[in-house]
Image (cartoon, rainbow, N blue to C red; front, side):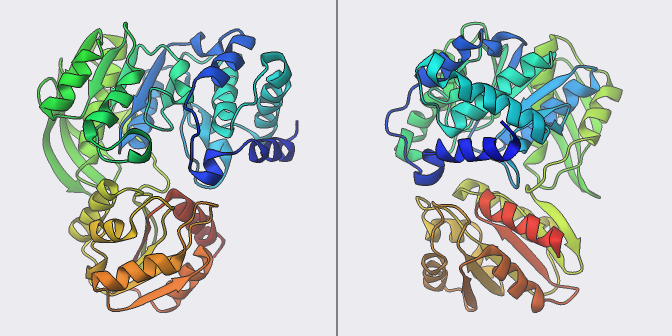
Length: 429
C-alpha cells in the first residue's frame, strides 16, 4: 500500500473512532494478527503505560530517559494530533509515509490468513509491533488506548507496567466507580511485571496488589517529589526514587503535576534497568522531552496555549496551570470543543469557563464531535457572559485572534481533535 491507500484502509475499518461504541471487547483480532506474524510484540522488552491522565507525558519521559541511556526505543501512543504517523515512532521520529503504508499493507494482507477483520486501533497496534520488530528496537514503550484489560496493546508481556492514576473516565465501558476502572487498568499487569503507580488511594492500591505484580512501587511511599518550583519553560524539581535523590532536575513541561509524571517515569526506567541512572543521563533525558498539544505555547503576543485536556480531571489541571502559572494580564479567551459522551457543563466547570472574558465554542472535527450549540448552551447556564459558537475550529480560532491584543491570552482545549485542528490552523497562519 501507499500512504493514501493505508489511510483509506484504516478509515474503512474504523468503528469506535466514528461511533464511540465498542460492541464486544475482545483481544481476539489482535491476537490472531500477531500470531500470524510470529508474535512480534515479544521481540523486545516492553514498558506498558495506562492511567486516566498523564500517560502520554509519562510515555514521552520514559522514552527520552531510555534514549539518553543509549537504547533504540520504539514508542506507540494514541491518539494523534495531526497525522496518524505520530502514533508510531522510533527514537522520537515518527514513521515515514512509505513505511506506514508498507506496515498497514502487511496487516491488510493478513485479514484472510488470520480470518479476522481488524479495527482501526487493532491495525495500528499490529503495525507498530511489526515495525518495531523489523527495526530491531531495544525496548518498546507502549501506551494503552482505552482502559487496559481489553485494549489491543494488552497482548504484550510487560517487564514494567505503569498506572499513572485512576479517575472517572470512560465510565460507559468500566463504570460507575473508580474501583471498576482500576480493575480494568490492572489488566495490563502480568505475573512478571513490576508495577509503578502515581495513584495513592489505599483502595486502589489494594486492587493493584490483588493483580499480583512481581513488585509494587507507589508514589509518596517508594518514590516521590521534593521541591517543585516554576521555572522558565517548565518546572525545576527534586525527584526521589527508591534508590536515589536527583536534585535540581529541569522538566520542560508546564504544570505542577508534571513533576509527579517525571517521578513516575524516572522510577519506571530505574525499575526497568534495576539500577539508578547517572545524573547526566537524567538531565539529558528530561531536557529532550516535548509534548505537542499538552499545554503547548504556540505564540506569546497574544499568548496562545493548546492543551488536550479531554476529561474533567484533566480540565481541572489545565485551568489551574493557566490561571496560576501564567495568570495573563489581559483578556482571557477560552476556545473549547469536546466529544459526545462528555458532559459539557462538567467540562466547562472544571475549566473555570466563567472566569474567562469570552468562551468560544466549536464542534470537534470528529464524527463524535459535540455540537458547538450544546456547549454554548452549557456555558450560558454556567453564567459565562460572552459566548460565541462556531461549527469549525478554524473559524473559532480566527474569530478569537481577530479580537485579541498583545496582552491577551487564548486557551484552546476540550479534545485532542480540537487541539490537533487548532495546531494545524495556527501553524498555517
